[in-house]
Each structure stands twice: as C-alpha cells, then as structure tokens.
Length: 384
Image 1 (cartoon, one colour):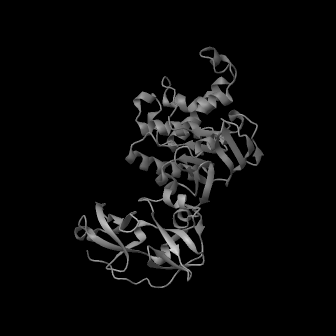
Image 2 (tube, rainbow, N blue to C red):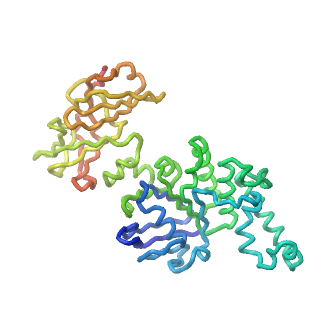
Image 3 (cartoon, rainbow, N blue to C red):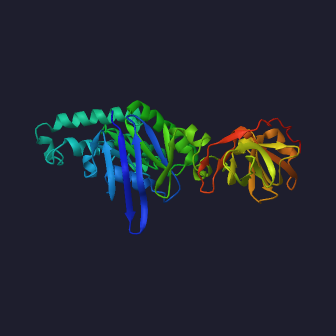
C-alpha cells in the first residue's frame, strides 16, 4: 500500500497563480476528493501529481519516493478522465489490455502476425487475457468484452475506462471528473460502484469533482479548494458541520447556507439588526452569522422577520424561501412537509436559528470559534 504527498506546490501560468503553496497527504488506501468551483486549481493539482504538468516549486511523493522530476509514465499511477478516451476501433477487451500490452510485451511481440512467432508471446497474451477477464468481472462487464465503444452505453464505457486503469495495479488512482458525462441516475449508481471498487482494490485515490454531492458521499476526506489553495481538509462530516471558512460553509451544502450580517455588542451578545440571537461570543464587532437550512426554525414572534417568496415541496420536506425584512437577504429553511399548506406566498414569518448550530465568521471570513448558546432555545413553532 502506498500514499501520496504533495508538499508546498506552487504553479503559475503567466501572471495567474493556479496553485499557491498547496500541501496534501493521502494515506495508503485513502479516498480523498478535491472539490471546488471551476478554476480553483483542482485539475492543475491532479496533473502535477500525475506528471502531466510540472510544478514551479514544491515536491510530489508517491509511495515515499520523490517523483517530482519523473514523467507520467514513470510514476506508476493510473488516471481516469472525464472523457473516456477509449480507442473506437478496439473492443472493450482490447482497450482494457492496452496498458498491459505496452508494459509487458516487447515491440516485436506486439507486431501483428509476426509477433505470434516471437518466443514468449503466446504465454504473455494468455496472461494478459486472464488479467483482463478478472478485472472485467470485478466491474461486471465480462459480457461486454467483445463490443466496441460505440456499442456501449455511457456507464458501460466508463466501466471499461475504469477497468483499463485498474488492470495495471498502479500505486495510486487519479480520477478527473469521471462521472460528468453521465446522466443523474447513472452518476448515483456509478459513484457507489467506484467506492465499492476502491475498497476492494485498496489503492490511494484522488478524485477531482465540482459536484459536492460526489465528494461528500464518496470520500474518506474532502479537500475544498478555492483560488489555488486548500481552504479545509477533513471528513465530509467535519467539512459540513465544522467549516473553518465562510467560503467553505457557503460552497458545501444544499441549499446554500444562510448568511446574515450581525454584530457582537460589548456584553458579547450576538444581534442581527438589533434582534438577539441567543448566542454570545468573546469576539466583538461586525461578524457574519451563518446557519444551515435545517437549523433555521419558524417561531411565532421575537425572531427575524421575513416575507415568504417561494415554497418548494420536496416530498419528505419543504424548503421555505423568505426575504429578510431588514437586510434583504434570502433565507431558506428546511421544514417538515406538514407546513406546506400554511405558508402562503407574501405571508409574514419569523425565524430563529438553533443557538447550538450557529456559525460566526469574522470580516475576513475566518471562523470565530468562541461561540456559546445562552440557553434560550425553547420557542414555540409558528403556525402560519
């Protein structure tokens, strides 16, 4: 088992800094996702780890070996790309076999017709055939081996691409948005298959995606990247429940986290437009109060006044969209579906965040850690 280490890697393209002093450690057998908006540097980092691009500064190690100056072919990693990059004229069997043929057979053995007469060719081809079939069965595509890519569905082509990567038994896997070309239902199915496959194969994996749902459901740890930096690295639970940066809190979670300008008075009381929020802090001055939709409760009065703009019925729950009367911020609360028929558009409501689930961030967007609920948590739910 081998791990991956990135140590203080920087990369610029002209005046644009793509990576800014990025460090990352992936333990042996660990699945780590790089997630962030387009242009945040995640694909650049992946290419530098793979050897498809060179860092301006810093070091990359795989299995405790410095590979910073090695080409992609010498790093023993396998990449799976967004576009499957299958050879259209080859069958699935032949596509999967390509890396084994190139690695284990001589140029003479690879020649058509003549290669069959070179000593050892028959034995080598039998071994490759056996390894291809074993890998295909692992991905449940053994029955598709004689088909060409045009005869396969998108999900089947993706499995062939995965099989081609796995058959090499590399030290690590690098996956660059491999599910982007699949429809929604197939993405859900395939991401489970990738996780199951990772557990069976056990190699360190770095997975690049802009889809937070993929990152949160598939990974042992998630690295949230923005502007060429890793803002936070942690388990999916840590990223969601304990964000260190307002940008992380805003990026992770659906619907987007509610954020309101707030003040901490001289007594430490947190207020939003003068309304106390049952939360105190040792930090004084201007802050941002953030709370997730499921932690924003309806109350009869003495809360944040808002006007209902839209109600989304999700089946198991309701998303209430309401405009805060003071700041004009859009607030979204996740409520039980029984509320749906009591929430008319244009109606007045009051919200209060659950005190023990409030996040405070300073003016630079950094998390304020010294937050304490005051205990006034029991308030009657509104019947609008």
